[in-house]
Each structure stands twice: as structure tokens, then as C-alpha cells.
Image 1 (cartoon, rainbow, N blue to C red):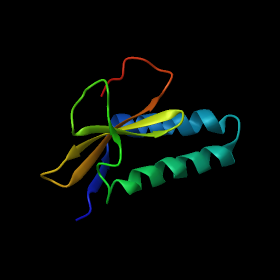
Image 2 (tube, one colour):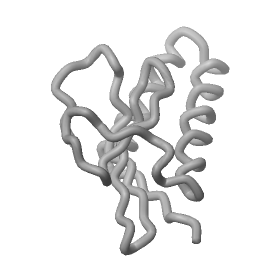
Image 3 (cartoon, helix red, strand yellow):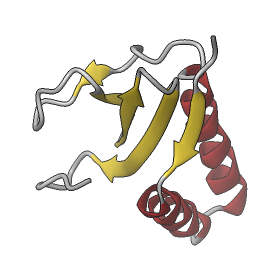
Length: 98
């Protein structure tokens, strides 16, 4: 069964900020990168455990996909077949918060 994908308000804000930042230099590249990140997320519909466990939290259900230089942080709700994307986090930043 496929998992439902939900983006948190913070993840939406992160994604919009990433695209806006890249668009300052090149709108085409910004749109392309946004589509790449969306494609990464869609993979989770059928492969929820594709990402690695997030080192900062060490919980089986909090995982990440890495699309350099960003980490896509997500939570898996196995009972509800739901993936909640929490953040798009630049790898140079410290203190990951969800």
C-alpha cells in the first residue's frame, strides 16, 4: 500500500525559501531543483524506509533523504501509512529542529 505524503508548514516554507534563493540567480535552475526535490519525496510513497535514520534523533521513524546540499527530514507513521515531511535542511546548518 502506498504512503500518503504530507508536507508540514515549515517544510513548505523551507522549500519556498530554497527555490526563491536559487531563483535570484537562475529561475530555470530553481524550478528544476524544486522538481528534483519533489521527485525525491514521491519515492517515499512506495519506499518509506529509503532514507537513513537521522543521527540527531536516533529514532526508527525519523529519517532523511539527502539531495546535496539539502537533507529532507521526514517522519513515518506506519499505522496510518503516512509520511510527514518535516524540513528541508541545508547541510551546512547546525541544530536541526523539527
